[in-house]
Amino acid sequence: MSKHKIIIEPGTENSNYIKDLWNYRGLFYFLAWRDILVRYKQTVIGILWSILQPLISIVVFTIVFNKLGKFPSEAGVPYAIMVCAGMLPWQFFSSSFSSCANSLIANSNLLSKVYFPRLIVPASTIIVTLIDFLISFLILIGLFVWYGFLPDSKIFMLPLFLVLAIITAMGAGLFIAALNVKFRDFKYIVPFIIQFGIYISPVGYSSGAMVYNNPDIPEFLKNLYPLNPMVGVIDGFRWCILGGESQLHMHSLIASIIISILFLILGVWYFRKMEKSFADVI
Image (tube, rainbow, N blue to C red; front, side, top):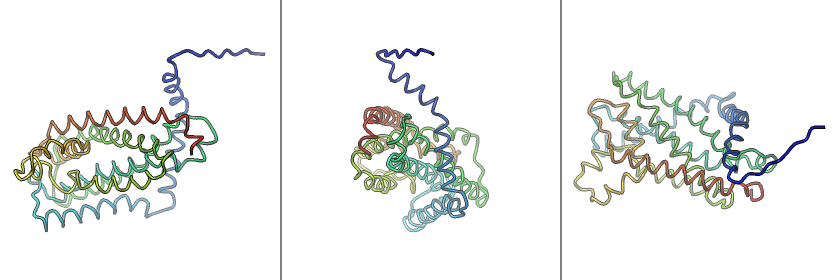
């Protein structure tokens, strides 16, 4: 009969948790694959919605901001391409943030039955939204063909800003997910945050033309503007996609990187703090 020793050492909780994340990677793949099947298997609208939703938003923003509002484009590119370059990262962030924030409630039965690192649940939702992003990217390729636009080598930097968008969504999503378990009201706050965020983020307009180079904008608002981490993400996407004379505002990018990392640290810390009570509260 074999003997086992249980050794409890101080300060090993986090290292063991990281090992558990690796050991339960199969569950991560299963949850991600399950969500993909639920969204896309035996359905057409699931795939089409990934294209129609951002496409409709691009058309509306182009009409409202460019045709009616006479907002200028950036770097002389067609306005629809500029809006698309801002809509894709925003759509990815909003979907990732919403899915991550509601993931624990959606998997409440699983949380109350077996042990596994709960961080796997919100992390697995990013895979589905990443696939949505790749499908939506077809819109941008279609606009390139339609307008005869060819991006330059900066587009190869795009994955770096996608990683920044993931960090931003995960940080904010983990914090709200943990709060959502105890305070169910937060599921109503998430859509409000997304709806409000799209108007204070440079999705339908250019940061340079409408904020930084606009003399009608007070200086204190220009200083507050980069505190929205999606400003640096969207501006970075546009810099990669539009190329040419498109500007990358370094102060907003640095602010986005710092704030996104702080969001992630705060989100993981609070998630881990509340994790032990999830099964009892949910």
